[in-house]
Length: 427
Image (cartoon, rainbow, N blue to C red):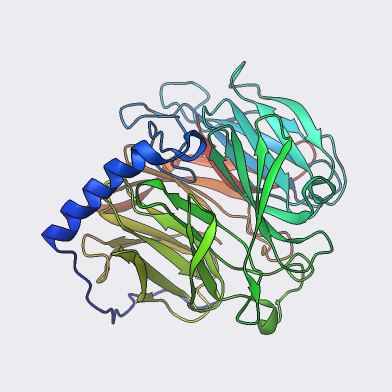
């Protein structure tokens, strides 16, 4: 594995004039009054996976961490793990409970997400195509599995549920592929009870064979961005053949659901992270196949993409997160065994700030006050190394990052054996 080092930057300059900013603000105000209710922005909590989720405020400290967890040997059901993250609690850093799916089929617990009011969690099996709906409102420390949908493919016509993005009235799910495991993928919408509402297929043409992976919405600009990985038939291969991996990022008209741009970046553009706040016009995306980070910016309705960080080869940037003041960028390097921090006050010229070495870091979760970063270390069951499975906590800020050695959650000691911690949500 390649050790990460300070990357070099060769970005192109972009600028926004004062007149453009004024025009943009006026356009946003108009948009707020003209969008239909189900897509109107309703920001309350911090913008993370979904700008529509109303959860913790910056002045609220998290007390629980939910971790979507796979049974390591796939012999027992996957489960939702509840971790105590209240520093005043005698059980700080300890696992409070687990809530199994009850399904022993090959599931692959991967991503999950809240509904708008953060009272339910929609969690899926990347392989099984099952959907598990948990009630986290009645007793947050002891979630309850209230519904299982056995086959999203039969329900929607699409398979490989990846990203769960809350929208008013339900959840939008990015599906990797069609019912037969090929392309195209799609964005499907379910209501809060898990009933099928609609599907929006990915572009399916020679230069973009219908890949779908992650999604991020910027209602103020009436824009949505989706990304690429591979189709369900291919992701269990190790490695995935280069011809079966996408490089396209798609810019959509959020209101109309129509494609505006298809841009080809580097291989495997994964996590879509818009900058925070109504005035922001850009975002970052990690291209895992080329070990690069790109920045995009909406300029007068046209989105421009620039490669801004070149990491060492085979670093495998797995996740990126942006501080809520848009000042700092965090990058997890799965194969590089590190989490890196960059100053992105000038997003086209990121500056390396700090690095913490961890074993195969993958998903990250930043707290609303931008002071704490939780990190898990399972990517996929067929890609994980023989490493201890953990969730760590980094104390972060403009001065760098430090590992909190009082908070290390051991995922190797469950009664059923080891668990693979993947995605995380704060409560």
